[in-house]
Picture 1 (cartoon, rainbow, N blue to C red):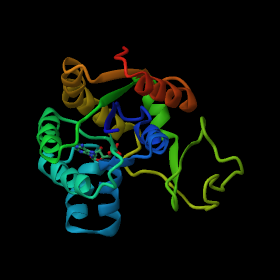
Picture 2: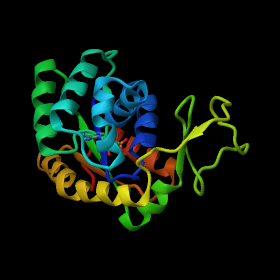
Picture 3: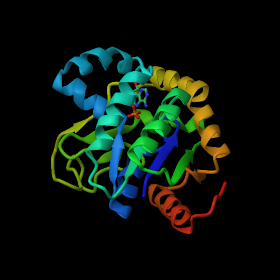
Length: 219
Ligand code: AMP
């Protein structure tokens, strides 16, 4: 199953992409995670995008397209969940051409819809395990044992550099201006399934899985 997951910053794309990839045995491809890894490793690409990401701005389309092109060539074969891409119409068009060339048909696009007023709170409280990447939130999802990752037992956690109120507002502006047209684009092509991202993490997963399994277009 080949999917795209769309949603405003803080909608829970990363969390849900991991769960959906696990459910269907596919690979999560997160451009944000890939770029953060480049920054952490100090590669040429990482140095180039570091400031852009810290400011909450979008990385140039060509770089994103190259990243995805490369990753799609190294897939296991069971399919993918694209998380955080495409974010612009240019990326969506390039992705279409790429998928056609690689004979990887896109089966559905999930839009996780959220109430934006709540997003700043959601984003500024989130943090992840430094070792395994499991996501947490100061208010909504704390580790079962304080300071210890539920999944791998690590005691080190990290906050994303771009998870602050000012940057979040910039990311929301870009989402409206550049990514909402992508949602409309997939809606016109009848690939879009909308889910309510204001439900609990488990409920959102259940809704996505139900909509994918039923195959029907729901909004
Ligand atoms: P994310 O983890 O998806 O929120 O992405 C974090 C940051 O990486 C974004 O704020 C952008 O600076 C950059 N980024 C990730 N994916 C894309 C994309 N598809 N297009 C442009 N920039 C991106």
